[in-house]
Length: 333
Image (cartoon, rainbow, N blue to C red; front, side, top):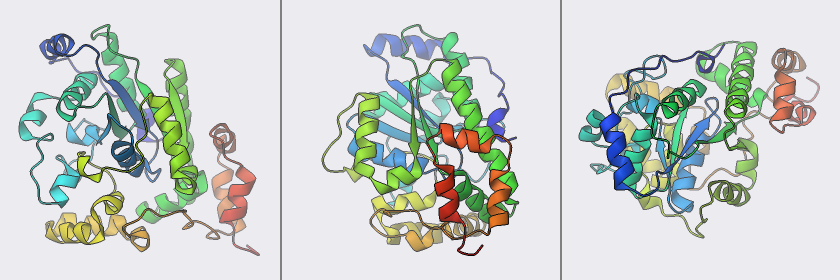
C-alpha cells in the first residue's frame, strides 16, 4: 500500500488564536485547493502554470515538506523555503523563517490563509499530494471556524504504465510494485473526495501536455477565476516539487547553476532525480510525454495491468486502457 493509505495522527491545534484573527482580518477565507496523486503526475508543473496564468490562484508547493509533517515528509531532502527565489538567488518575502515558525501542520487551512494574505491570493493550491494530508486538513476543518470554504481537490494522474516505468527508473522496484501504488493512491483519492462531498476535477498529465490551454480553461472554470492571456513568471513563490519543473519558468541554465551550488549529497541526489527528464529540459514546455512509448514487452505490460482492480480505476479516471497498452508495447513485443 502507498503511504497515502495510512491515516496521519491529528495533533492538538496550536493556532486557535490565529484562526480567530484570520476571521476578523478578511471578509472571506481563501479557497483551499489540494492536489492529490502520485509522484510523476505533473503536479508541480500544473501548479506553477496555475500561478502564472490564473488570476488570484497561487501554488505554494509541498507544504507537507515545508512543515516536516511526521511520516509524510522527506526529511533533509525537501526544500523548506521558496524554490524559485533560491534558484534566482533572491530572498523570498513570503516563505520566511518567521512564517515557518508561525505556521504548522496542526492548522493546514489556517496556514493557507496566511499564504493567501501574504501573496494576495483568493485560491491557495497545496501540492503536497498525499491523500492523508488532505484528510488531516478535513479533520481540522471540523474543529475550525464554520466560515471556511469547502476544500477543492485536483486529482493529477499519469497513466499507470507510464507511472510504473517512472517509479521503476527512480526506485529500482518491479513494475507490479509501482502499479499497486498507483491503484491504491487513486482509489484512496476518489473515495476521500466522494465521501466528503468535495468539489473535484481529474487532470490527466497526457491531456495537459497535449492541450495546456484547454486544460487551463477547465481549471479556471473549476476555481471560478479568470485565465490570463499571457503568463506572469515573476510571481512564482513555492516550496518543493521536481527540479525539472522549474526549467520552463527560470531557464535551464539557472537550474543547472543552482544544482551545482548544492552540497555534495543533495547535488548527487538531485542529479539522479532529474536524469530521466533532462532530455526534455528547454525553455518551453514539452508538448507530449512520449518517454514511455514502445518501452515494454507484452509480459511487462501484463505485469502492470494484471494488478487487481487497476484497469477499473484507470477507466474511472478516463483512460482507454487498450490505447495505453498499444502505445507502451514494442512492435513484436
